[in-house]
Length: 387
Image (cartoon, rainbow, N blue to C red; front, side):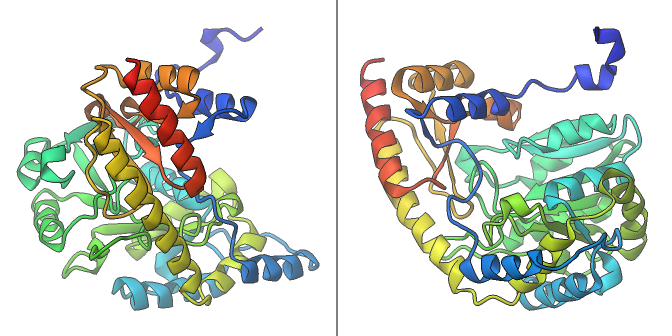
């Protein structure tokens, strides 16, 4: 029989997360409309699926751990064309989604007790990964009145000259939908140089932008190529979540060391997925643009309705989430979310999943069919009127 003394202290002390329980409830109760998952509800583009069927008829083997050369060369061209990042195939590592890339990079970059600076509210996967490498997360608060923009002065106050080693950026951001401006990125770059910080730039939602928002890769700024790891994925732009394919671009020495950790974690990303990745990077952008147009239509439905319900919501510039202030109804986002799911049959994610500065908010995903969002909003409105 397994007791706590058979389990590491590191694992026992991981922060409690509600995602698994929320996902279980959604799977087991078909009456629940989910505004929870961060996954496109679109199918993988048809040309990719057709190509995949051809690939399945062939025998495949392990690729080299760093990734198939043909894919890494295609990524090099993509980074120069779309991100203004000039690099070469030796500076690219292909991974099982960008989550594995981030974890492998944390193993490479941080020793126990060293610090990673994490803006909060921020993506829920960062802190557990930092904890698992026995490093220390330091939360840098983001404020709604700043449009969820990272404040360089606030960032400076959280840096420990001796212990702070990594700064994680996520733009466009999950859960806030903020897209970092060039001005802020330039100021952050100066701070990183002054304090010898390595920047992890998580750009999973780089193509999902609205109105006049633009995505700028901090790794493209002058003098930053040796200080930035750029993480990107096929999951969001190409609706390839289940194929588990991502990558990281960075300084050659770091990527070489990171490849050691990656090798022992997964050996390598799936060869079939990598072959499909090469094909994906050659696709016409109409497939991405079509998804983004529909996401914008849904965003323009959900944001005004949430505001009208008394849950102030900043219009997201990117990604496919709203982050709404529920302080008029509850001080506890977890309790609020559970009641909403139990009584109104609508699943949302409590703000505490995104760090301590997410309390008082809920995240809704609009990667859900338009008509389902309409029904969910009607249920939420009725629920709030009864509170």
